[in-house]
Image (cartoon, rainbow, N blue to C red; front, side):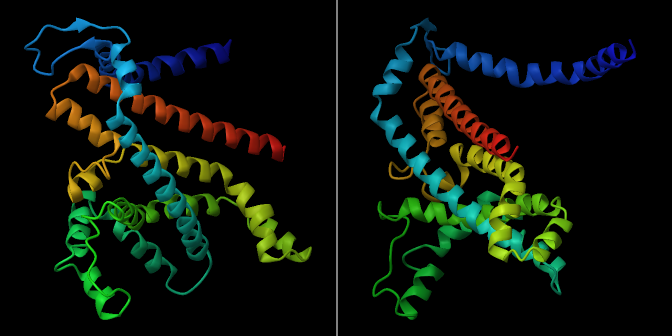
Length: 293
């Protein structure tokens, strides 16, 4: 009886928050789904017309959407992979005991603490092919013969965006993984040392399996951000077909083309893609946990 009363009280305490979330997030989401089945102008000058699945059929046939999806997936896979590997390496280093560890931990967060717009503009200047410091260093050290237009060359512009994102967001990944490392009890490593396990064996059999929950959370956070990437690309190169992400294409459809119906369809597609990635991460993590059990 007491448990039922406690459960009822818990729901009563949580209910106001759930109602606020339902209003703030649920209503706009319902509106997006509603307009994705309609032909609608964002200014509502023309009457809204129900078109069923025509927007979704056009989406599947739209080469601009496929190009933006391909750019986004390439950006996501490469950036998240590099950020995970580098973030894990940094987390392992700063998790160890050494003099000045606190200063190093604070210093690595500087790129992440800088606002994205500021860092994007800074890197735009640094990568400039005329006065950019990156080209100056490359030419003066003899690594390249001529300056490279990183942001104007279709073959390099997307990877320049990836490099900027990795520089900025790797500290965030390292911070999440460091929190996971600090939850692993130290006595299991002492037992492994007694059993004669090498550091490499300890990493693969102890650290990595026990770090899996934190790693999955970090991957979900970073993948969600990468799939919705907008600011760093838009600030550095604007609407460029070589780097146009799904979020930029969505903004272009809604704002530039004033197409509320098709823009809502693109938004729904982004939501579905994000859901698929989260589902896959959770399935892989669930199998890993069951395998350990």
